[in-house]
Image (cartoon, rainbow, N blue to C red; front, side, top):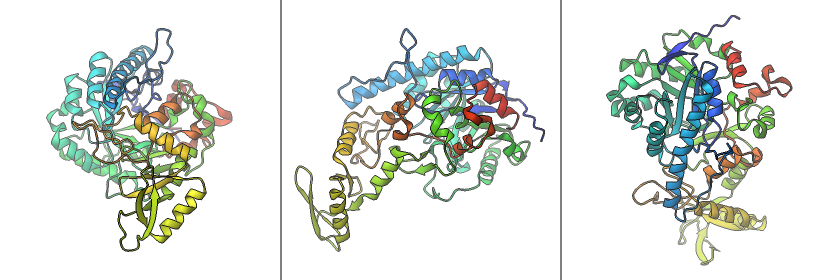
Length: 466
């Protein structure tokens, strides 16, 4: 089968319509994104916990010295701006003027707007576009326009884009570089499932993208490309989307395949695990402290969260209906009431070593071991505000600095585990974000005998359709 990939004008320059998906917390770096741009595509630096370097070029470990959450939050914002500028400058040097460079941020990360302003002003002229998702980034358009860069909102439906357009984007349409459709059942990391959509009932992306295009066309955006993100591996599988009037101009984003390149910081630590994945080994799960569903490798870290969720029972403060069994817990010897079945389960879990019942915001108890309870509590105390709102710690970047709800022990500290994962910890025991097509590493002959390409080799391979 013959295959030809035509260049397209993206963020002001003719380049290959191939984007490196931004992977936060020190995975999409200046080295990876610069190499992707140098190969003729669009590299994406993640500004989510981007690495900083010392005078000798060594990564500066993230350490917070502030005694309060607010003090640590200010450190986080300062680190984020410094790291983002550092990585963008490195990417610019590596790219050597080729391709385009984008920056990716999560709208729901702590200090997102401040970090956007700080990096865009500190690396002015080096960034050609900003992608942003994980929430509804209404302010993305005016911020990007202020610095003369194109913006690329990440959505999962035409309805979401319509809301963004009517509220904000219609005021600065000239800087809308593209709209990223991130498939909520195929993409890695956080996914934009709506309340009306089921995580276990995936939908065909084609009609959803056609709906997005129809919505865009109603606003006169026929010329603005859609970026397909999630599930893209071989371009030969997407030829029916190219030169298709119902889809319009199309760009393809690769988030999972670039995890294994010579330039990738997780090449060595993640390589063996990624090469062994089978279809179904990536799970769309509800445990993220953001409140979004997210896709990650089903490993011991994720399994512990699934098992923790199974040790959860409802309680009431006073006997009511079938909640008549008294249960005393905690240092204050609080008395609550469970059902007979719940009391039996609680006694069994305690006998198995899950002796610490922790309260959730939903009037339930979840049972964990003594060690896990200490870890959860310490992680909550160490919160540095990496999210605008965090279920796990109850932090929020509002005037009260709290969500107003109890901290939720059914979740986890996302910054802690992602930093450890990026810095070489055993990926089996940390959160390992991945798209659902990751099983193709083991099937694709390109990776036979453990071969790991350079970014240049990968981009060249992708451009052939393979």
